[in-house]
Amino acid sequence: MSDKIARAVFGLLFETSAEAVFVVDRRTQRIVSSNVRASDMLAREPGSLMGMALDDLSCEPERDLLAHGHYEEVALRRGDDYPIYVELEVAHVDTEEHGPLAAYMARDTSERRLLEQELHAKHTALYTAYADLERAHAQLSDTKHELETRNHEIAMLAWRAAMGELVAGIAHHLNNPVGALASTVRRLEKLATQIPGDVRGECERLLARVTQITHRIEHNVAAIVQASRSNAMEDGGPGVKKRELPPELASVLSSFAERLDDIPTKETQR
Image (cartoon, rainbow, N blue to C red):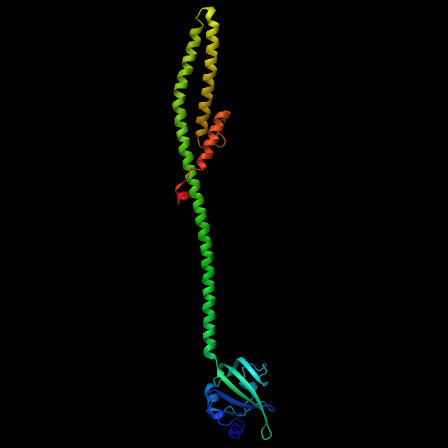
């Protein structure tokens, strides 16, 4: 009966087609005919599909496959109960002798589906690796920026320390002659008391002027020495009374410190 249906309705195409073909009675929704290719594709014995319900063949019984049209990614149940994914082309044929029929032409897409899944998995892995690479690059950029900032700070600290030592050395060399000058002035003050009264007043006025200048120089040198010390740069150091630089010296040192910031380092020259 199935061969008669196939020949009567579908002719030689049913037997010679390279695709799997089976026919379903739309009233009973059972398979009434199938070709050899359908049995091979579904790993079933020839003739075993006869009388099988369409829902039993499908792995998706809730999916309506009876209407005519094109169906993608349809899972059919093989003889070993493993699913096979196919494309289905469904055509309706109404005959007076056999009634309403539905012809199913199935094309195996399992290999293509597997390749697509592998491609999707590789794409996902590549996207994840790219995201990880972007995060690593961002972290590396942040670390590089932080390292450059620290190197610049270290270079500036080294410059300031070197300039502080230079200023301290200059102040030390100034301090020796200033001390000798102060000692000389004190000796002159004692000698001035022995000068006759008519010229003593003028000498005392000149000595007072020299003494005032000497004290001013001593104060400035002491302030430079203290300012050149690393601890004194902030709060005068523990137990040390902070000296205020004279306005003219403070202006000079402030201008000098500002120019230090403009001195190029090895990092900024790269």
